[in-house]
Amino acid sequence: MGDSEKTEEAIEEKKSGFFSRLKSGLAKTRNSLAGGLDNVVHGQAKVEPEHLEELEEALILADAGIPTTNFILEALKQEVAKGRIRNKEDVLENLKRLMADILSENRGEAQKVAEKPHIVLVIGVNGSGKTTTIGKLTQKWKNEGKNVILGAGDTFRAAAIEQMLIWSERVGVPCIHQKSGADPSAVAFDTVQAAITREMDVALIDTAGRLQTNTNLMEELKKVKRVIGKVLPGAPHETLLVLDATIGQNSVSQAKLFHEAMEIDGLVMTKLDGTSKGGVLLNITRELKLPVRYIGIGEKADDLQEFDPHTFVEALFAS
Ligand SMILES: Nc1nc2c(ncn2[C@@H]2O[C@H](COP(=O)(O)OP(=O)(O)OP(=O)(O)O)[C@@H](O)[C@H]2O)c(=O)[nH]1
Ligand SMILES: [Mg+2]
Image (cartoon, rainbow, N blue to C red; front, side, top):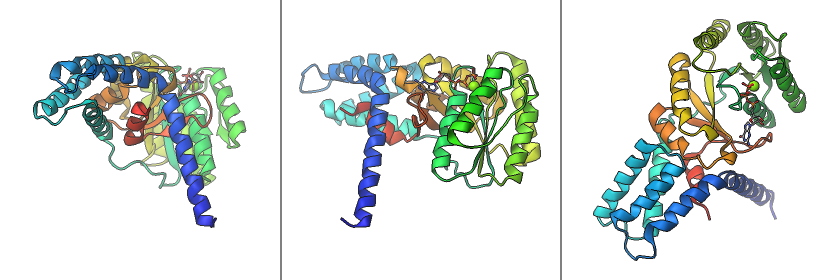
């Protein structure tokens, strides 16, 4: 076997490993959707509009949200009326296409780590998975040969700084930190400056996650963002909002509040492995007009995947 064949084989293996992990991560959402789809036809040869009611229920159960579920159902009914949907396979094919189209909206140019240093500010309510996502992204970028520096910007809890230091040691990257209670903007300032002087490729800055209804905290996050921009004009290059998929539709209002205050560039949806509410990605994409950049499908360092609408939809319906 030639070298190129070996590489190709390795790439294929990697791809199938990636897909099967995504598939098993989405098992709960897949089960609820597949159940609804199985009920669509009830063994009849021809699909009638009323058969789609079962599918409607399944989409609601998967937390696709009412507006998005209605949108999908209307589109499918039109296809049925035009005679373009006859059997279950046609339903599945059209459903997949509609979902992939929704998830592909607002994607634009995916942010490339081009400008050096690329500054990423990570925000979200507490427990959503910010620090874990930072750890996973650090691992991913380190594996890609990038120089990564971390900023322990959650100075609210001593344990948060500790958690960042553990990731920094585990992956082998520096972490800028101060004592707990320190000004988070000062940590962000130091991190960006260190990223510049040490010629780092990427800096990932953690923040405290507290209730979005607390305006003081939003003000604090805004200040962090402003300070980053003062040290390095144009930064942060990405402000990522981390959302916990298990809270389902509540993440939509949460994201709106954060977006209003912070002008988010992209979303990270974590804990998809622990929920049947994966359909929430559809509604959030339509409502927020923001791209999903990464998804979390477990707690381990390699349980973060770059979000790809088509792969995601295939994994949702894979048998
Ligand atoms: N199953 C699963 N668990 C996750 C995922 N991402 C994060 N977690 C877990 O969620 C919990 C909270 O994660 P953190 O990263 O500490 O969340 P945080 O947003 O930094 O929280 P605060 O620092 O309190 O604001 C931890 O137990 C993580 O292991 C995921 O994709 N899947
Ligand atoms: Mg944290």
